[in-house]
Length: 109
Image 1: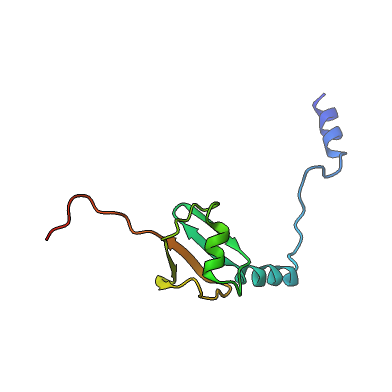
Image 2: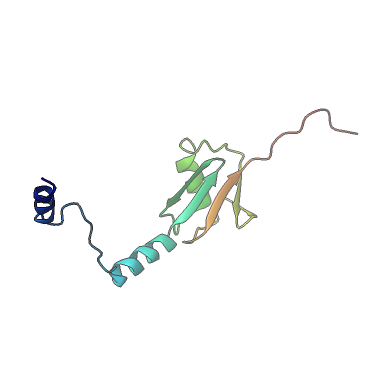
Protein backbone atom coordinates (compact mmCIF):
# COMPACT_ATOMS: atom_id res chain seq x y z
CA UNK A 1 0.00 0.00 0.00
CA UNK A 2 2.82 2.41 0.72
CA UNK A 3 4.23 1.72 -2.76
CA UNK A 4 0.93 2.83 -4.31
CA UNK A 5 1.07 6.09 -2.41
CA UNK A 6 4.63 6.72 -3.51
CA UNK A 7 3.78 6.04 -7.12
CA UNK A 8 0.78 8.37 -6.99
CA UNK A 9 2.72 11.23 -5.42
CA UNK A 10 5.81 10.80 -7.55
CA UNK A 11 3.72 10.69 -10.72
CA UNK A 12 2.17 14.12 -10.03
CA UNK A 13 3.62 17.25 -11.52
CA UNK A 14 5.21 20.02 -9.43
CA UNK A 15 2.04 21.47 -7.98
CA UNK A 16 2.44 24.25 -5.49
CA UNK A 17 6.23 24.31 -5.74
CA UNK A 18 7.59 27.74 -6.59
CA UNK A 19 10.35 27.89 -9.13
CA UNK A 20 13.10 30.49 -8.94
CA UNK A 21 13.21 33.13 -11.62
CA UNK A 22 16.13 35.49 -11.89
CA UNK A 23 15.13 39.10 -11.22
CA UNK A 24 14.85 41.50 -14.13
CA UNK A 25 17.45 44.21 -13.45
CA UNK A 26 15.54 46.84 -15.45
CA UNK A 27 12.41 46.34 -13.33
CA UNK A 28 14.45 46.44 -10.12
CA UNK A 29 16.22 49.67 -11.13
CA UNK A 30 12.95 51.26 -12.19
CA UNK A 31 11.35 50.47 -8.83
CA UNK A 32 14.38 51.84 -6.97
CA UNK A 33 14.30 55.05 -9.01
CA UNK A 34 10.59 55.53 -8.30
CA UNK A 35 11.17 54.96 -4.58
CA UNK A 36 13.88 57.64 -4.53
CA UNK A 37 11.44 60.18 -5.98
CA UNK A 38 9.06 59.81 -3.03
CA UNK A 39 8.98 61.97 0.08
CA UNK A 40 8.52 60.40 3.50
CA UNK A 41 5.98 62.35 5.57
CA UNK A 42 5.85 61.81 9.35
CA UNK A 43 3.65 63.16 12.11
CA UNK A 44 3.71 61.26 15.38
CA UNK A 45 2.91 57.60 14.71
CA UNK A 46 1.67 58.41 11.19
CA UNK A 47 4.08 57.97 8.30
CA UNK A 48 3.92 57.19 4.61
CA UNK A 49 5.70 57.81 1.31
CA UNK A 50 4.14 60.10 -1.30
CA UNK A 51 4.99 61.45 -4.75
CA UNK A 52 5.43 65.06 -3.63
CA UNK A 53 8.47 66.19 -5.60
CA UNK A 54 8.04 69.86 -6.58
CA UNK A 55 5.23 70.55 -4.08
CA UNK A 56 5.43 72.92 -1.14
CA UNK A 57 5.36 72.00 2.53
CA UNK A 58 2.25 74.17 2.90
CA UNK A 59 0.33 72.14 0.31
CA UNK A 60 1.31 68.90 2.04
CA UNK A 61 0.25 70.32 5.40
CA UNK A 62 -3.12 71.31 3.94
CA UNK A 63 -3.75 68.02 2.14
CA UNK A 64 -2.68 65.73 4.99
CA UNK A 65 -4.03 67.84 7.88
CA UNK A 66 -6.99 65.59 8.63
CA UNK A 67 -5.50 62.25 7.57
CA UNK A 68 -2.33 62.65 9.66
CA UNK A 69 -4.01 64.85 12.31
CA UNK A 70 -1.47 67.65 11.78
CA UNK A 71 -2.13 70.72 13.96
CA UNK A 72 -2.01 74.10 12.21
CA UNK A 73 0.86 75.27 14.42
CA UNK A 74 3.04 72.17 13.93
CA UNK A 75 6.60 72.91 12.89
CA UNK A 76 7.83 71.39 9.60
CA UNK A 77 11.30 69.84 9.62
CA UNK A 78 13.51 68.64 6.77
CA UNK A 79 16.62 66.80 7.99
CA UNK A 80 16.00 68.21 11.47
CA UNK A 81 15.96 71.83 10.27
CA UNK A 82 12.88 74.01 10.41
CA UNK A 83 11.43 75.03 7.04
CA UNK A 84 8.58 77.31 6.02
CA UNK A 85 5.41 76.45 4.14
CA UNK A 86 6.94 77.79 0.91
CA UNK A 87 9.78 75.22 0.96
CA UNK A 88 9.75 73.09 -2.22
CA UNK A 89 10.20 69.36 -1.63
CA UNK A 90 12.62 67.11 -3.49
CA UNK A 91 12.49 63.34 -3.85
CA UNK A 92 14.17 61.33 -1.11
CA UNK A 93 13.55 63.89 1.63
CA UNK A 94 11.94 63.28 5.00
CA UNK A 95 9.29 65.83 5.99
CA UNK A 96 8.37 65.68 9.66
CA UNK A 97 5.66 67.69 11.40
CA UNK A 98 6.28 68.21 15.12
CA UNK A 99 4.59 70.16 17.87
CA UNK A 100 6.47 71.04 21.00
CA UNK A 101 4.82 69.57 24.07
CA UNK A 102 3.69 71.87 26.85
CA UNK A 103 5.38 72.13 30.19
CA UNK A 104 3.81 71.33 33.54
CA UNK A 105 3.55 73.95 36.23
CA UNK A 106 4.05 77.69 36.37
CA UNK A 107 6.94 79.28 34.54
CA UNK A 108 9.65 80.64 36.82
CA UNK A 109 10.10 84.41 36.96
